[in-house]
Length: 327
Image (tube, rainbow, N blue to C red):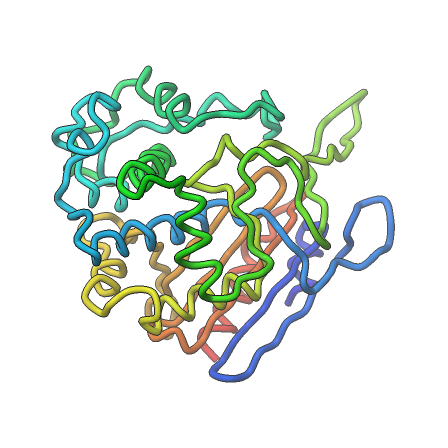
């Protein structure tokens, strides 16, 4: 199945599947387009919006500790940050029902390369970009996915704890779970450790050539999408989450509840499969695509990292996901 993902237009595909106490992992494809070195099974990759599940878990831990309430407003904690902040709650941010517009719409060129590739962005600068646009709808009235919500949540974590969101992720999740290969990279453009390179196709002189986009400054994604990880670390995180090691049952239940939010809980995406609903998150970064989903009880998991280039590996990825979670 991984070979089919690569044949569908990817440079590399890496996966780990866990079923109870059994683990299967493999890789297909190459590290680079111009050599035959095989993609590493333990390869690091930019996990994109899978980061949101980590950020949401920290926020919900703060709720559990009584330091926050899901009904608290943005204005209460971050005065004058956004328009209508008094009407936007933490729950709205977590569930993408705030109406905050997407800040990143103009940050990539037409082929998917960051325009200011090595610029360091502050979270406040990203939110200001969004605030130049009209809000999508009144808070709580609709669902629309917007990375701006999670940039604000990162700022909220820092306001409540006095420490950057990245520090809270490390101390509350990465260190206790032993996720040694997961990084919150900040302004570093590197993907440390073994990894498959990421490319986008660019037409030059009438022919398509690959442009390596592995290196860029991930502050443009921040608390919404900057984490670098491995398939094993992401599976370990979700298993701990769904088995109640990070949140108590009540808040975990709320996290998995989409309400009226169109298949999105509090930092979790819901995927309907033939064997029931799977929970997890997808992620995208320049040249990287991640799919990480789990059975409701956390007993079965699959994380798949793809470095797509041409064609559409989506159907092959869905087939692998379904086979892993619905044996």
